[in-house]
Image 1: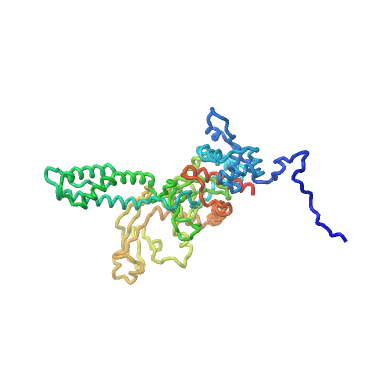
Image 2: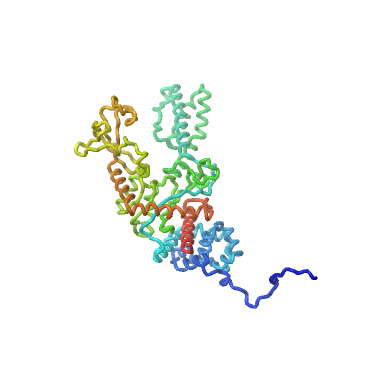
Length: 509
């Protein structure tokens, strides 16, 4: 009996086709690449066209390059070299590029240079288009931030404290040499009083070194150590001081920056793969979202979310000619400065403050905290737990790092020394003093009422599954945990592409 053989479908690589298949037939009707094509075709690209010169050789069409880039970010292809390869290997890239094959340099120049001034308008056009379809709201948003590692060396950094320490050492050494010069100077040397180094500059250091060399250069018997110190100071101090001034100008209000990406600041990242809390160069990315669509984005060099809200709202106003009407955010934004800003813009703020969650838990509340003390408005005094008056003793003012002025009223108890609650109620030396910021207390009370209203509870719950999944989707699902470009302007372009990709993915889902 003959053995049976398995049956296979025909396979012939050399088979000729009467009608070759088209790319249009190979791309499914509901594929995300078609959504990218549809969205980009609908928006106004005039600002992008304006970035091209009217003369010179012809360029690849910016609409095609934008579609290729956006689809690259939609499909987790972020490298310009990989996008170049995909345009020759992937059916979807070949379809959306119209069988064009831009090289990686063209793609990279388009992303870094052509989109510098126009990507924001492209993003806004996409958002407006989605808003017209009823998929998102520009007026009611959730705000949150995340830190994304910069494309920078983790071990080449500049710290503000190190600069301050080095400048202090420089001042002390110059002061010591000056004192020695005064001890050996004669009347003819005409050595003035030591220079004022309250604010030290390169010019002051140079003039001090020149004067010391002028006086001590005439002396024959100079202490060898002092002579060595003066020689080192002459050679290095003015140059080092110039370097410190340049570094301080780059730092601004920051505490650090990376030498390989001066816009990046060292921050602690939650998703540190070493899990040792190591500081890494990163950017603080802030977004506003609505139904998991990105409505607005800004990039910040400071790690604290609190100080980013003003610039973030300003960008929203620049993009859509109005501030949002409702904002929901976590306690990282609940400061007096932010509440005051939103009040001025008539924005309804469902924003927690730092004590909100603790106040929700009645079991962990401190019975002696300031908010538990009775306030007598007629006498303008607080009543301590033992029934004594705490009288007003004055006001204190302080300015935040952004220049916002806060005012607090201080009230002091009269006899804490013999009180049986001393040590429990009062944990400071002397009579207890409480400080009350009346404006902040009013704002917190208003926030508490808003957050615990039926609408507030609904918005608090929605925030957790509105804005936070956007970051989770970008970083975990699509593997974008580190920027590929360097410099704040290029990082803004890159995240703008990520935001457009997120919105298109969401529309396609």
